[in-house]
Image (tube, rainbow, N blue to C red; front, top):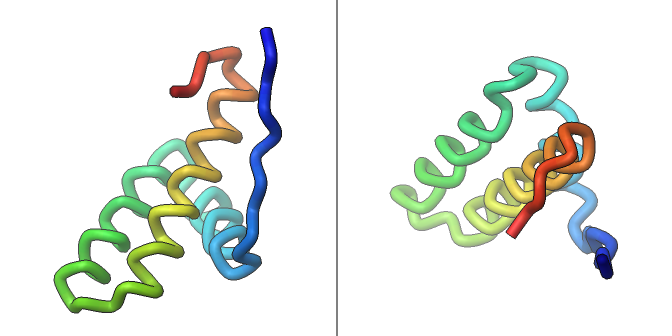
Length: 71
């Protein structure tokens, strides 16, 4: 199986993901989605994109530790 590495180009999103994992554990992905939704409602495109990336980072880390296939 060919696995592509996760490429993170936004340091802020990585920090946000790390913070959510530390504070919310298994619920970190849901919290990232909620933050993204709120940012979208406020029309804050930059934060929306960062929260979405933070959610992807969390999902990727979760998949790597649980052996799941991530699509």
